[in-house]
Image (cartoon, rainbow, N blue to C red):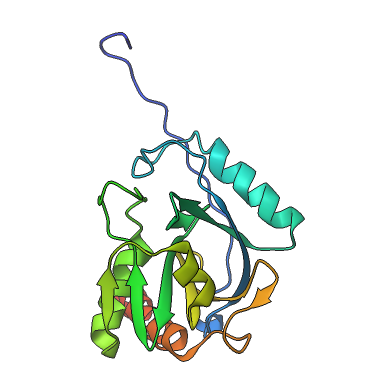
Length: 185
């Protein structure tokens, strides 16, 4: 057990990124799908992210930007992103704390759901089977560096028409507008 009065170490780092004004379209991303072998407390943010880094190394070796993780046949999250799928214009993303697929409660995931409300896009929070991921009209990944990106290549197969789809673009526009408003004061 830690000794009483232990003082935590806080580490933070930042990297430069393009100005918001130059970030006007959702990025296209390539992803692979692999089993989620990490521990089952994904909602806890910790500096011990070895499982995520190993998944990203595997994605990089496969020529991909992200590794989407699947546990017990259900999509959990990406190595550094939250994940959603689109079918028939409706967004689905796994429910938080459903016990089957624990995920980090991502800020951009919450923003995406708000953006869906703003843009009139129907959505649901529920378990997303791997088979649905592979047959989705659009696959979305969400992170603070990307807002929302369209996965256009999944395990070597083209997703949709190979570009970020209409739901991705609508959500990106709403999320971008929100960030622009926050930055302008």
